[in-house]
Image (cartoon, rainbow, N blue to C red; front, side, top):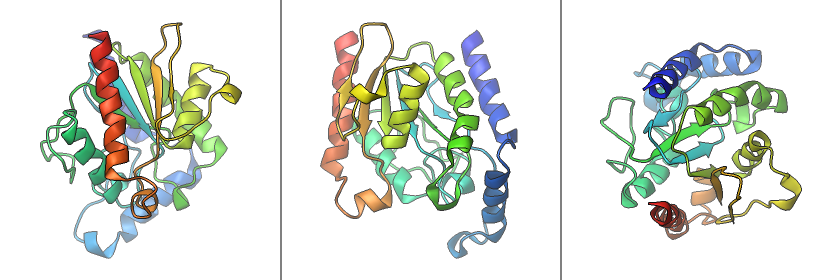
Length: 228
């Protein structure tokens, strides 16, 4: 119970972070100006905490909140096309209670997975700086430390892949990012599965298809069954 309470406390603390002036200014500007389609909605406009099952065996790591997705709704991968692509896949594979994520209080529940990101604030152009990434990584490290049952990591995109390796201390020159690339170790650390990020740039161009993404979660399910 201590770890669950500590995790909940961490997620309540994250929205108050103001470490990165550029990101603070951008996320708050977006929240004020809004997108026309959401002009009548109140934007979250703060760092976005992780979301999911405190007993999760799998940690999903993305890049950063979308300006009009998570920065609007306050929940990871919620309120935009990337989130719809992700949660529909998680629902098909039995990890999510419903296929869509529209807002924080929409009833969505996750089973055996926890979703987080390298950066917690929406960055201009979806491109956080190296300094901003470094400032935010301690939150990711704390989440990993407070998820006691972790068996695997799914890195959505090359930056999530790289930064997880940074935290885990693995020699990155030997580990290449690619959709479906899988790595495991004998030191007790979680296995690592790489996937293309479900961004519109990837899904609308066919770089990432529904079948390709479903295969990732089928692999996750298979790996978990091997340790049951």
